[in-house]
Length: 243
Image (tube, rainbow, N blue to C red; front, top):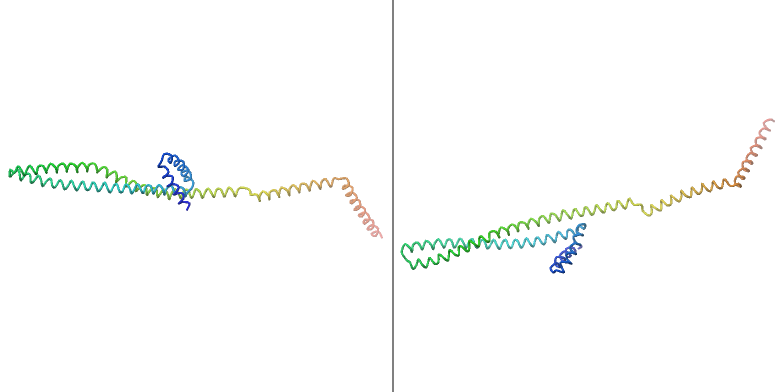
């Protein structure tokens, strides 16, 4: 469906360009379509399809013109041949009348001969005029046919190329997106950073705690208590060892 709308848009541009104002508007629209066709496979396909349809119309017109001109040339050739044959027969009759000294009959046939010569000359001139026109129409007919084939080949090639390019661009965009740090990754990174900060704070708090005076005094008392216990145990062992 999008391709159909694009084709209708291209056809609309071509229709608008029939008037001076329409041509101005149409040129702007055409530029937009061309710009879109440079990157959009479907738009490019629509432009090619429109070009193919236009060329097919020209091909049909060239074919009609070629057929008409060829038919006219054939008619001129046939007419020329018939007049030439009739002229030969008339001249042969004129010679017979001349041998009979039939001046009255010779005068009538001589007038007919002049009319045939004029017709022959007219057919000859017509053939001279038609031959180059037929050749040109034939050439244009062949050119349009080649253009249709070429446009169809280019359409398939260019559209496929645009589709591949578009697909590759999408893949590159996906890769770039994959390389980009996501919001979740950033949160995880913030959590790691926070843990490290908390660890550093804990180490600092421990250091501050251990260096407080009351903490030092408590540790000293704990060490003295341990020392007293050790001394008591040592005295008991020595006492009973001596006994």
